[in-house]
Amino acid sequence: MTTSRRNGRELGSSDVVRRLRGGTDMLTTAALRRLDAELDWYRGLAAEDRSWIGLVAQAGIAAFINWYEEPDAGSYNAQEIFRAAPPELTRSISLQHTLQLVRVVVEVVEENAVKLAEPGQQDELREAVLIYSREVAFSAAEVYARAAESRGAWDARLEALVVDSLVRGVDESFRSRISALGWSGKGGTLVVVGQAPPDMDERRTAELRRACRRAAQDALVGIQGERVVVVLGGEGDLRAAASTLLPRFGPGPVVLGPEAGEVGDAGRSARAALAGMLAVSAWPGAPRPVAADELLPERMLNGDPLARRTLVEDLYKPLVGAGGPLVQTLEEYLSQGRSLEAASRALYVHPNTVRYRLRRIGQVVGWDPTDAREGFVLQVALAVGRLSESIPGHRGL
Image (tube, rainbow, N blue to C red; front, side):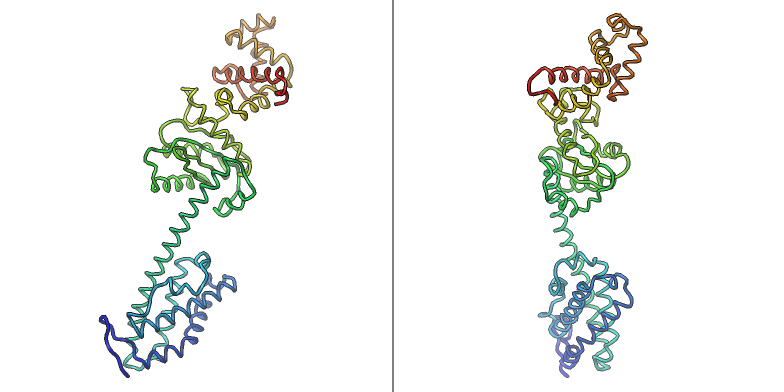
């Protein structure tokens, strides 16, 4: 038996190395048997993944033997050990599972040290196993950290692509991409648009993503230059969830798109919110956050066809359909400076009749004519509706 020293550690005895090489299959089988007996996650894996883990265990034992024989030439790099398996295996088993795998293999080699080494060499072999397992564990943690960093960067790029697709128009690949990001699809969807903080770096972007995921079941974040687009999804009050995120946006307005039934229909919400951001400066007193539909007049004046269509379809047409007196009363009330008495005199009806019809208008369209802002929205809706009826090609908008 011959041994020598290198870098402070004896090279492995050629006799022990020979026995280790001869016992590789036995050690691998014993390790897999122990995994199956002790670890529930291993038993729950698909047969293919279990076979890959067998190759990883075998590669780990072989790498230990090479390192034991030649400490300088051998490797304890977990990336080299995992090269025997496909990269997808790191998604099937976690870092914790990998460390459990290392522990089991170490215990199996330790327990068989008596069979694999002479009495005087057993302590040396055990010490070598412990040193090697420690280095492999640290190396495995580094492999998973790099994999997580790579996946995080890829997820961020995919997330930005999905948000951009939502803004521009959902295509056939949209659903598969959003599923890859873990979108559950439960409940509704709400798009929020605001200014990015002046110091929006990677750290603040990551903090915004974490805050969004705490606020709602599902969340996507897109940074588009100086603009931040957030997509929230899930059950519960999404508007309240959006309000909790206001400190994460930069100074200036924050616009909420109309809530959509599911993420595939959220394109309209996104386009409305973006149009609202372009038009909100025309309303200096706009609240923060402000709903995109509260900016219908400003959006329409800014050339937003969706706002024009909404004013006609959701406000003007329901009023016309509810009966002539409602439209006539609203027009007279607005033209008389929002005076009940003046409107009643012009219509030759009692003021209570005017008051009743105004309440009825609120019930029909959800906008209160007696409120200054909402009355303005209704006034614009009347004008746009009249134009849609009188201008050829605009009828039926």
